[in-house]
Amino acid sequence: MVDKRVPELRFEGFDGDWEQRKLGDLGSVAMNKRIFKDQTSDNGEVPFFKIGTFGSYPDAFISRELFEEYKSKYPYPEVGDILISASGSIGRTVVYQGEDEYFQDSNIVWLKHNGRLDNKFLQQFYSIVNWQGIEGSTIKRLYNKNILDTNIRVPTLDEQNKLGAFFEQLDDTIALHQQKLDQLKRLKQGLLQILFGNKEPVPKVRFAGFDEEWEQRKFKELSTKQGKKNSQGLDFPAYSVSNKVGLIAQTDQFDGSRLDDLEKTSYKFVEPKEFAYNPARINVGSIAFNNLNKKVIVSSLYVVVKMSDDLDNEFILQYIKSPIFIKEVRRNTEGSVREYLFYENFANIKVPYTKSIEEQRLIGMFFKQLDNTINLHQTKLEKLKQLKQAFLQSMFI
Image (cartoon, rainbow, N blue to C red):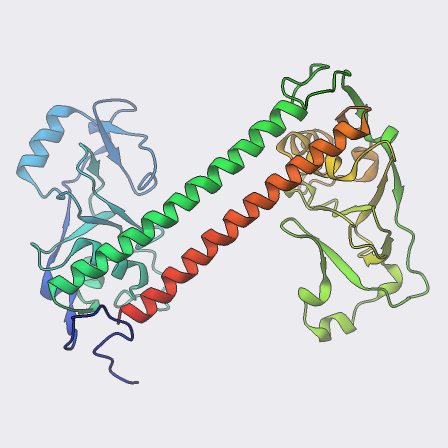
């Protein structure tokens, strides 16, 4: 294995080898003083973070008096220090921002390095680190020795600062895109709730020009069960249902040898504009509309449904993939160990329904466009994350 001493990609003006050190050469592991259960309360003045609430919201607190005493007498992080989870999901990090808060000893630690490392550089190193002594181990604990014996390649502090600032800016961009994506998802869920979760005959929000009252109709009034079997074993393309992409070709899921063994005579046909779903997975929204403009086949386990011409397919697909529908599913599923939604149960679920097919189309089109926007932001976010990983691989050793 080649001993790399310089990164593949480097900022202009920096040269020379990066030093091979151990974290223990550059600092020591620090942690807060132990807090006992009888010193905590469910509410109080100073948050106390345990490993289960690390990076989230506290469920325990300590008194101001105890906090001030322990903060003055025992180790306490400085602003910018990188806190590390040492148990459970080991290696998770949180940057200490200077708030009054306390952390569970031994489970949440940090490297006290007295400025020999740039914390922003160190945070990025932690995201790609291979902790010493735990490769292949089933131990869910990061001991002080594992941290201190871990190797790190370090450049000068100036180069560390440059790298840390670069990745901080990239992380901020990723966080901004994540916030935008989350906002769009919340917007969609809120609008779905307003339209489909409202039991009133008139939605609070609707497109201009429509004033008819909505009805609550059962699917048995608006759909019929389909799914003729491919009894002759005709060579139609076999598909499955994915929650993320809808109908997906089994050739994109399985290797060829597995597909050769499939007995397709029991498969069911799904005609264009029909729906298919797995009755064992409907709680996660695994239902798909055949918009492929061709007949396909799916496993005999699937339920195939044709909706009435009184329903716009995109309108009903948006309802079926909404949390409101999933709640209805849970009221109608059978099975003590695993819940199944057979067609007979599906048929009894009520759907908020407007007789105006034009209003349905506008609603379906609106949510489809919103989905496209969400998917676009999701793709941008994934590309940014991939870009960061590529930079980490080429700018760190």
